[in-house]
Image 1 (cartoon, rainbow, N blue to C red):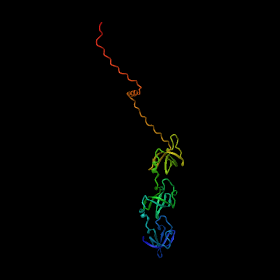
Image 2: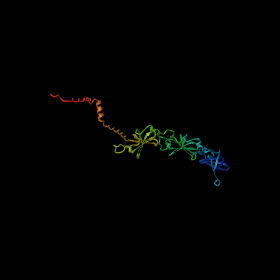
Image 3: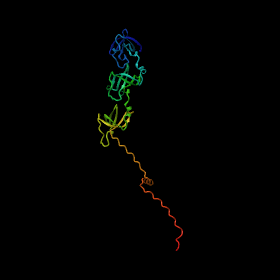
Image 4: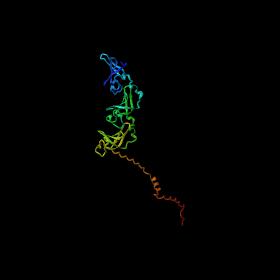
Length: 296
């Protein structure tokens, strides 16, 4: 087992090709052993009857007269050297080969496919299925997010080619701002509001009405309203919205005036000319002369 031999392709079927190793001795190369590609091709596109082929022996069962052969085992496994050719963070071109509910498989080269998870297709669109954004056979550009050659796993992302709109949100709106939004969907605890450019905010049911109302305002999907931003967390991708009127700011506290002293008040009145001038001081009385009147 494992030895390499050369043989002649005798016939090709839907499930593989029969190769003659010696006169009267044939082995089967199953379709899954014809190429490293996960996307099996019809054997007739890889080999033709009469061609010489180098194969590796996988299994030998003389009792059942069966020999299992492989074409791909004599070729280098592209995954073993993939990390030498591409690095995490590199931008690559790939062709969409298969679509599933959780993402799209894209082929970088023969035998190497990567997964673009549905959450990594777009920042702004929220597809329910990858077919809403990409289709089979489409050539796309993507960023290598992770690479594990031993596990044969490759993660790709298309949205990483663009700037995350959440990272620039705090430069566009701030808490207290009024924004216009369209109700995307209504849930039991509130409504999610589309603010544009892939940004959604939440208006909680407790923020839908005012004190003068008996209950919250009913919101319908598709309706447009003006909301007040009450919470903004771009890192957590959260925007809190409210339909309530912003509370009026409290008036500043009045400054208590200290009572003026009488002397200060008198000086102010005097400076304003509201008090008469002070009278001149009286001259001191002269002392009486000594002695009495002369006697008659």
